[in-house]
Image 1 (cartoon, chains in turn yellow, red):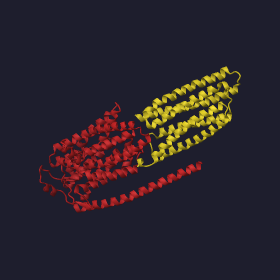
Image 2: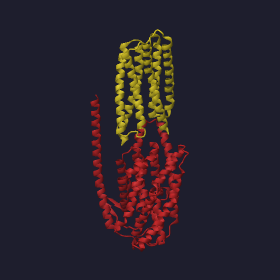
Image 3: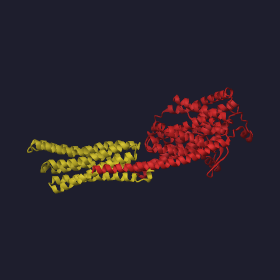
Image 4: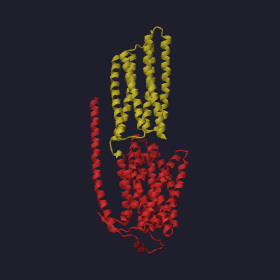
Length: 216
Length: 413
């Protein structure tokens, strides 16, 4: 019988570990971006390799969670939604890794005057993802608290939009010394960082619907 | 020839197993929380146990309503009930075997000129109404309790679901036991007064005449579950799956409790011992109780758009099924007696000496008891073999799954 097997316990541990990976990935991303802006490349590379390990772990856990849910017929009524949520969350850590890789490959030149704004943008954008993780954890333990936790995700997403708009305005309207290619490159990088909060918002929309459904 | 007469009852049993097992395991199987194989094995074992251990209570009430005292009469009455259920279901009208058998017995009473015990009839009719109402009350109370436990315990959703899964198996077993205990009266109740079999002693267990018949009926129900209930569980069960998994558990438990209450003589005796009125031992329709349970939860959750058509159909079923079955039974008995010359029974005189009644019943102990004995031995042996094969296959499947998982990760590396 299901209660007497270790499957349930293992699956709960795997889901928790998956969320831990996302949480750690967010912290590492912030530190990596800070290191990049401060031009500390050793620290940046150390963080990049760390996030690669975390992303690979998250991928393995995602596959394992989905496999176990199918083979042991766990949460049959919510399987599709839970799988979709795990997918969306995995998308976040994928995006964190790919953004850091963009920085590493393209080496964007961030003007000194924009350094703080870039760090602020990264902090706010990742805060949206950071607030999503406890909400996703709460879905499994206290679904009635999910929606209030998600409010912060929506708040940080809209803040990210404002900050990115401000930086873009500064780049294109005030920094005449930069050439168009440089400006476009910076815009492209900003879009990548901003994208983290967009993915978080998408996951939050899904989670919000899931919470309503489970409480009905 | 005597065994041939049991066929109509066995057919009723088969159809009961095919249709009503979905009330017990439908939600669990349709939602894939429980495998059909597991559900069918558990339901079959517990339906037989319920029928043999606790089936006499509701049968006695049917016997009071009209003791069919010839096997030809029992055959015709059970056949009339089975045909009524089949035809009404074919025309998409809700028909319950419980109501059909009551109508058919009253038809026999009219035909033989026996009086119908109005008190027994009153008890039965009141139970048809109180069954779904009680189901609704139980369902709401259990639902509130379960919800509160879930919220206050902060239990992980996956752990909670695994408890629900186990709960569905345990409650399903209890539901199957109650179904067997309560509804066996529909299947074999009319044969009990007509058969007088020798007690069967096997491995220290003694089965009375009625219990041997209930065992045959239970086997017929189990055959219905194994051979035909899968489709019904997967289609009918989906209607219940619309509810959350905890609501599905509550619905099955509430239904099982109602069926158990109306078939437990010990509980009735306990009620009397504490100064309460006895509980009537009456077969109730599990499908109608289930509808009551679902409506109860729906009302609690604030659903205002109740489908009054379903309630209306149940109400029509309470009248239409016994009336059509009674008429069919009356005319079939007429044909059986006057055209085929089959003895369908004689008038029951109130207060008739028991020995006289015994004399009228058919004593065919050795033949039927022998069949029951060999069936029981065969069942235990085949059950044990099936269980061993099931465990072995399950183990093999798990091992190959583990190997393929290992291979997958190895290749991925």
